[in-house]
Amino acid sequence: MIRFPTSLTELEPAAGGSAPVVRAGATDLTERRRLRMAAGPLLDLRDLPGLDTVEPDGTGGMLVGAKLRIAELAVHPGLAAAYPGLCAAAGALATPQIRAVATLGGNLLQANRCWYYRNPDERCLKKGGAACLARQGDHIHHACFDLGPCACVHPSTLGMALMAYEASVMVHGAADRTVAELYGDGSDPSRDHRLEPGAVLTHVVLPPPRPREQAAYFRTITRARSEWPLVEVLVRLVMDGDTVSLARVAMGGVAPVPLRLPEVEAALVGGPASAEALAKAAAIATKGATPLPMTGYKVDLVEGTVLETLERACHSTPSLATPSSGSLPEADEPPTPNPQGGA
Ligand SMILES: Cc1cc2nc3c(=O)[nH]c(=O)nc-3n(C[C@H](O)[C@H](O)[C@H](O)COP(=O)(O)OP(=O)(O)OC[C@H]3O[C@@H](n4cnc5c(N)ncnc54)[C@H](O)[C@@H]3O)c2cc1C
Image 1 (cartoon, protein in one colour):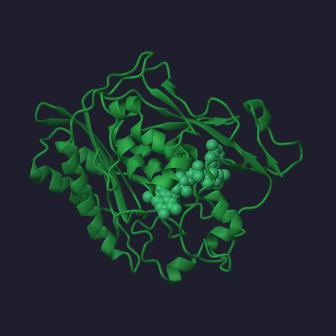
Image 2 (image 1 turned 180 degrees about the vertical axis):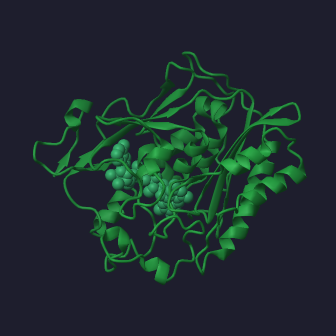
Image 3 (image 1 turned 180 degrees about the horizontal axis):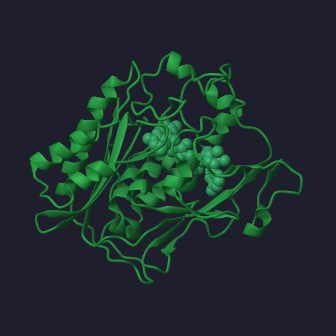
């Protein structure tokens, strides 16, 4: 059965019924249903109004609807002016075809890409099995920060980017939470996020932008396009003269959840953005790495990818935005998506 609610009040599940499976762009869900990994009644968000907008949140930040297509997010002038790293990340993920259909909410809540998990004939830890099959088998694309029983890496580029923007999410009928809380610490092997079954994520809340922020997104990948990253990083910097006054660094592709790197941030703040300082900070990014037998190579990529992203952020143009008080900031030209990232 498929339901197409036309208002939020229609989202409540029927009394006694099982929680429906929410469908947005369906680029991930359809594949999992074909593989018999996701079943049950569908709740399709297609006809739900008001969830594909970008508007001021009244506190200087922005409210972005969960149904906003990734392609639209990538080139939205108001978002690009205020949150350039987020738009760069959106423009670099997946393929133009996927970005045209996939949504912000679906990206945040997509399932991981572990080949054992996605194999209908395998019963891994995430599907109720006794062990993580990747851990004992082929895990070459898996975690090098081994945080939990499951060795997969989290797939969401936008989840990683929103960690760097300290964003939160609004959930219909449940408590709002930060993006970091949405994912947790990776210790629950049964799920890729902590949203309650059947709950609908309605909006992402972006805090007020920092004036003159410099940002960059960069991914290390095995081929130029159409690929999940081995390591991906988003850096935000604010400079006060020659001194870094704010740094936010997040990393994906390395752990079961996207990671914030507070020690790298702390190493940057209060000092110059010199080549030496950036290299020192990038080296700190590998601290705590616990690679599996096949993922030691990723630890080298972590340092290189963080350094590259830091350098790109330092050379990027400062953003135009100031906290929005009712109207969206405007950019002269929407950015052109770059397949590998730079903002
Ligand atoms: C070749 C290829 C490369 C890719 N590379 C990347 C990449 O580099 N980075 C990356 O991040 N992704 C990548 N992807 C994955 C792609 O971005 C996701 O499939 C897409 O973002 C999912 O969005 P969707 O709207 O289609 O979600 P759906 O398929 O509709 O849903 C995905 C999941 O989210 C749930 N869901 C969706 N919306 C909501 C909501 N509002 N509330 C509650 N639950 C909801 C669904 O129930 C489902 O479980 C790649 C995909 C392909 C095919």
